[in-house]
Image (cartoon, rainbow, N blue to C red; front, side, top):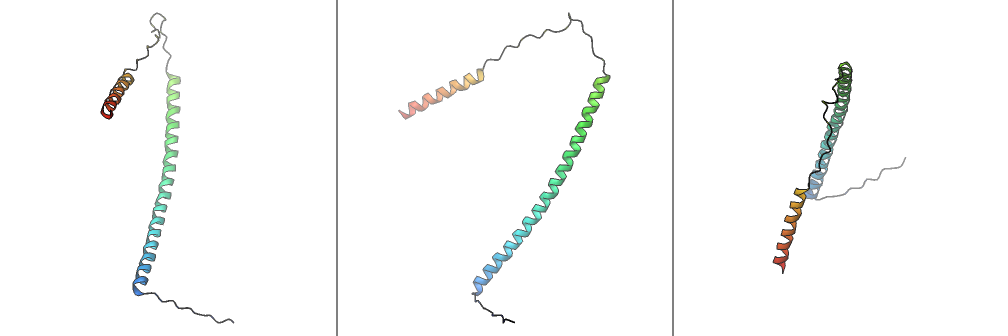
Length: 115
C-alpha cells in the first residue's frame, strides 16, 4: 500500500476568517436560491392548474351560451323597419395635425434660439 503524503498550508488568521466567511455566505446564498427555485416550481404548477380550470370554465360557459342561443327564437323584422347601414365617415386626423403643428412651432423656436 502506498503511503499518504500530507501537505500543510498556512493561512493568516484574518485571511482564513474572511475566506471562511465568504464560503459560508456563498453556501447560504445558494440555499436561498434553491429555496426560491422550489417556490417558483410550486407557483408554476399552480399556474398550470389555474389555467386548466379557467379553460374548463370558459369552455363550459361557451357551451352554455351556445345552448341558450339555440333555444332563443330568431326575430322577424320587416324590411321597412330595419335600419340601413350607412357608410361611416372617417374622422379627420385633427389630433395628429395639432401635434404636427405644435412640433413645427417648437422646432421653429429651437431654430431661433440656436441662431
